[in-house]
Image (tube, rainbow, N blue to C red):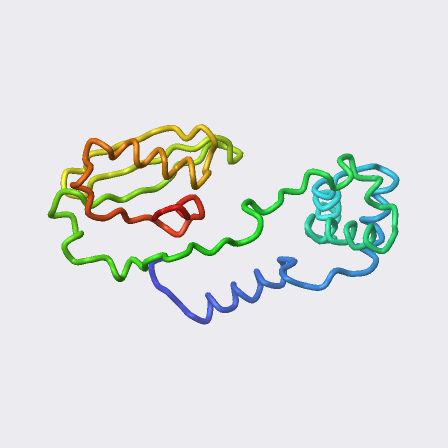
Length: 190
């Protein structure tokens, strides 16, 4: 113990790689078995993957989902044997990308905004579970003073801009810069 031997390590790695299923193409017989279990037993792809792994046949549950989606796209009926009929697949949040007009790169932030003078703020949002509800946070960099406010309409750019104006109105004339990330909620930065 305590001594590294590269030959032993390599032999162990090769042995482990042989044992694990890894990134291999799936055997057609395993795919057919997965289809059979889906249709006859009404099992979920996760259950099918686990049951087949117990028999030494490896297939990832995502591979089974892909097979079902492909079958559905080709007019097949495998999806009808899924409990949820592929309805609850998580969709990417946000939809199409929106470019922020007249945005300034953080590399162009003035050196004076390094946290030594009053009036330089950093702003971000905190989003609730399931993308419901949001809070805007503003931190004044020299004093670490924190301002927070709940946004009534979530990450809506117009409402966020109004909220920030209201939060910073006591410091009117003293706000030098506000640094944000490139989130679309900051699109109304001007």
